[in-house]
Length: 485
Ligand code: SF4
Image (cartoon, rainbow, N blue to C red; front, side, top):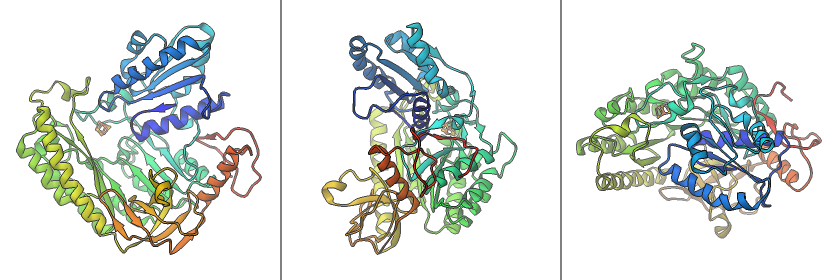
């Protein structure tokens, strides 16, 4: 399974993996795979070049190995449809963003008929979270609350590929959260293109704040995060729910995109910089230690030096903990692609460098303010690339800052919590070199142990409550369970 793109795609891949395991497929686990599934992204630059490059490399395997299958799904498949089979006729299955659950059937059909299968639906058949899910992490999980988007940002291809917003019922979401907690998950991230417009489909404008509060009541869920909210739909009841729900972490990722009101209008983003800054003030007023992060696009068509200066000004005022900065580039199929006054590449590059230099400076200053603080770090698997050589382990502070820590004599498992004092700061991470002042073994760590036992050949059925006898063959959990253990 190769996944490109955003968290939504990563979570979709968890569902694809779950559907395939449910249908009798097994992980290749380093052996030669009989099936390659590519979950594509249409947002990132050069997505199609990367896809066709990967497919080109797989053509030889396809020629040489009987029964080898290739499936291509996700946003680029939804967009390019039959073109994929025209350009790479050795592909077996093309499926879209609305029919993830059809993959096993389409693979069967392609094998049986000895003919490529293509199935792209225009709208969602089944909410994807009703599909089985094979989650990547034992202690931390993604949970979709909505898919699609009703906005029409002119740089974005998502609405045409993922469709109108579809909201999942609160009861279903809470049932999934409860089941995850029962399995040992201690951290969840609620996912949607536009999480705080959640409820628009069933007519409750306050639904997102209510959902945060209800999720905060679930026993065992220690950390609740969400991504991404839209500034236009951000209401004070959500800030209240964040501040008053202990498990909702002091963190907010809210895309700014531009600090220029003129450019925001051209982007069809219906808030203005004053509103954005007002939300930050109100969040910081209620949650003083909140770490706020953002996305910014540099060089949108028509962006002048003055517009860009406005972005720098808003970035200075916002004091983001970090920012994902993107250079605008044309995405075919979006309204902005055909706008006049595309900004020359050299100008975009120069602005981008100025913006990242400013933000890196702010990130370093904001991180420096963390030195001396004592924070609870949720130990993670695979967050610190240099952990082995530096004899550290890594994890996330409540505000989602990355912390590399020296574990001392403690055998900390991913999912456990170490309380540490921050001893050093860099722009993109913090260090805690004095060893933990306290450690807490959590149900998340127990779930990690259970999964390790499973991968060592002791079969465990996901959904087994912690402490119970692990039984059963395949660790696939239902995304929308009906039963709380
Ligand atoms: S809010 Fe705008 S950028 Fe985000 S998914 Fe919707 S259209 Fe795209």
